[in-house]
Image (cartoon, rainbow, N blue to C red; front, side, top):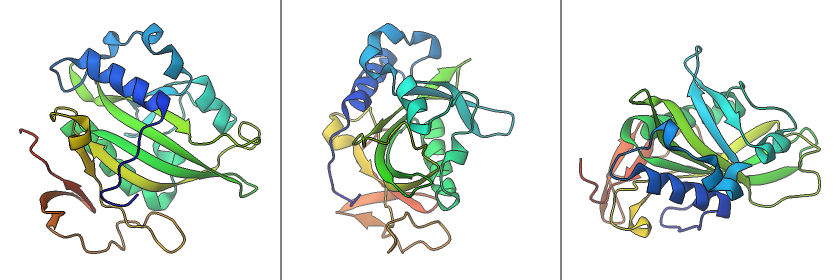
Amino acid sequence: MAIGERTAMQTSTRTLYDYWNAIRGSRSAPDRKDIDPTRIREALANTFILEFDEAEKFSFRLAGSHLCTSYCRELKGRSFNDLWHERDRDAMDTLIRAVTEDHAVALVTFQGTTALHTKVSFETILMPLRHNGSTHTRLLGAMTALEEPYWLGVQPILEQRITGLRLIWPDDVAMEETVREVATNVGNDGGYMSAASPMPIPATLYGRSARRYAHLAVIDGGRSK
């Protein structure tokens, strides 16, 4: 995803984001007990909740039926981090820290590949969620296929590679002004380049200062600290 590009969220992503934003009020994140599944019926099948597990990774605590169907297996209890190609795991860990520690919203696009090398693109969103007063152990999210080929649900997704990242700071004045594009480096094979071989990232992007998240740069735009 190129810096400066503005891409509309998928319907289920937008539904969940708007609901999350409404129930949090003036807080940086809503509490787990605030969520009423009946209020997000149209997005529920694509919705998931992650929890920080004993291996110090995030695993699926809950996963919607459409999401499980895409992977042809029950996802509850399975590692979220391990879904990603090994070259993308550092990037995903960095995004998760931005969500849990800085209370950003992460919007990710990725390409899933099956054993038969068929491919499908997805969009996923990660939002902070409070549990026992902390935002470090729970995440609310949704994952939606951008198209639904006939084989989806029959051929399981076995590998996924990040194709685009962005961070959203919900407390800015308007959402269109809050999107912080995360600088992503796409290699010749169409994959996301790992932190081991990053391209230089400038200190300013489009005239705006940029913060560093390890190998990622996030465009700042006036969010109060």
